[in-house]
Image (cartoon, rainbow, N blue to C red; front, side):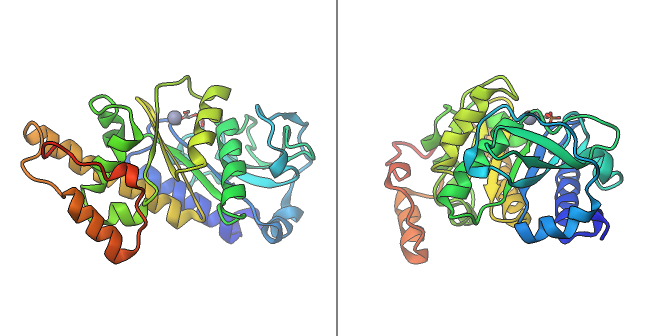
Length: 279
Ligand code: 13P
Ligand code: ZN
């Protein structure tokens, strides 16, 4: 089978294209990775080229030793993925220590996996553990509204979570655990990978101040839908704050408690603090 005909590859390509159409991927902004299931590896294995040489993955993830991932290439444009998947994405294999990777197919013009590979791998390792293996997708994008909020809201999980939950009822249903927030960090380094990995222990979303968002999920639809929901809520908040200073009215703590109770959301108490004003 042609690698690009595999269902998971088509899903990966479609997600890149959907993100591009949302305007979340200027130039080479953002990256996507998928932890491939063993049976899917067997489907595409006949299409693997001569394996590239082993290179340091930039982190150590023994929990992921020997696993295969589909990832976007560093410097590659999401706008080109649907048109040229072989040049813009690749399948990599991790060695038996989870410290080195080699390219099995893709990136036909040369190049390397995304510079955020350490962050993707650390997040995959955490999510694999805490989800019992169910989570397979890690997605990073640069949506404008959530980034804009990192210039005006305190960089605290409790504030971002609460403000976005108030925007529409779906928010508390889609990210009941809340969202993590990290201060500005150099992109692509070990620090951003470690901080994000720690946030992924508790949350499916990490906001990187003045940079973008990092989401985790079981499959492409859920992960894309999560990014979309957070960014939509951020857009509503940005519009609201642009219209007037503070909100005139909002969803109250009691209303959030009712939502949580009637839908069994189990919202963490730390986000249900009383607010002095409607803002
Ligand atoms: P890459 O092109 O290396 O994936 O980097 C894009 C990006 O958004 C870094 O944070
Ligand atoms: Zn980025």
